Length: 500
Ligand code: NAI
Ligand code: MG
Image (cartoon, rainbow, N blue to C red; front, side):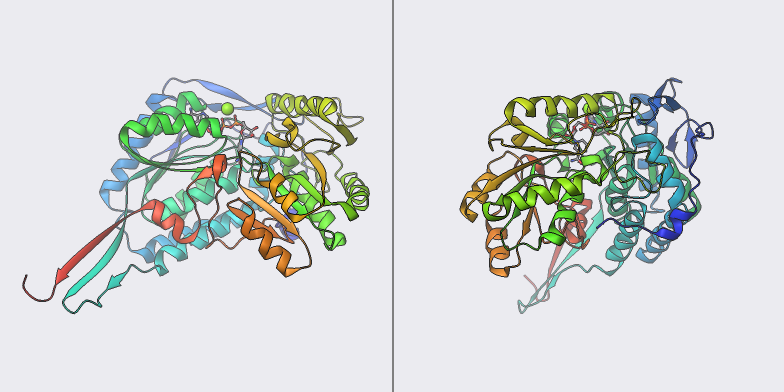
């Protein structure tokens, strides 16, 4: 599942020397700048728990400067009215530059949030794909013309809208940012991006890349800082026409409330408590390693993590045994070591949240595997891969998003029972089905109430297909034409061919 490029990996110099990391700055109108206030915040390495550098701490004034630059760029037409072929060339070049700087981006992500360089989940290579895909999509997509009526010709136009706010999380900082920046820019908009305060380092590479690729100044801007200080004034800014956000449902509600008076468009990709349904006829030799990757990759800090594993009773004991053996192979380690699969949790607050849930699990059920700090690791926000069993589907650890390497495993007898458990949460992001029966796969897929379903695989993507969730997992879809619809204003023209 995880994209990996062995050639690029060999170029990475494993280094504990972090003195080379310069302070992270905002990127506004094609220049890297400090905050107007001069304020900064610390960037902490989750392995050493030490400050590695600082980042500019943006507020309403920096947001104002960035939105101003973005609006000016939009009005100039240099990007918003550029030919689709020009936009394609710039984004293609930027994608090539992402590929060229792959090791550096990985190293920065490892430093800021602990993502293992040797085991990226659709990391920088997926980011380059995001740019290439939307570079092509915007050029190839057509509008609609309806000419059937004898004397009425009609057609649509998809125009860029204006300045979009992109608010991104820390769990896949570079990839999730490009997933939204690429379509926003491809369709001719300007962007002000507010990355997570937990991951302000890797994104700086993108500003340099867009400079070099020839993106007109002001089309892309980054303001670093905290949600309330930089994110909130950004979404509220009068000249921001829409907000695309990935993060927690609570923040989505706050953003929705802030933009409601101005009736801005929003797209929300939120959390999940996704169920994995393993039927008795599943191919366990393929299923077990993939299900493990679905909850332990990126230390479980994945919106689509398969965190509730439901196993049909005839194979339950066999599955549990194989799954625990597989989990033992996810040894926590230094993310800068290419052999490491399981890095640390991003920061102290998330570490406390994850270990807090493991404590809850001890009273709600039984910790079958892991459940603690790995032996010999006294420093760093490390948690063992953890498996919880003997727990009711209504338990907190079965209902709430833990966002760590913690799986709950429950038995079921019938598909109906499994579906009732799977659908019995407030979330509805992803669902996973493991069965060798096509009939079971399609029948269960039709009745799983989630935005995305993966059968006998994990996170395989076709970027034309919608990404997003139902219920508390999100509002709206992005991907292919869904992104085009969100990031453009579709208008319609009619003209009669005979006088009216
Ligand atoms: P968060 O939702 O607070 O942060 C995501 C982004 O929103 C960050 O860039 C943050 O600065 C920004 N933000 C926060 N408050 C804002 C506001 N009022 N206005 C505008 N922007 C704002 O997520 P957080 O606190 O980092 O993580 C908490 C939990 O959220 C995690 O434990 C996990 O359960 C969930 N989460 C889910 C993600 C996903 O991929 N679906 C990603 C990140 C977090
Ligand atoms: Mg927060």
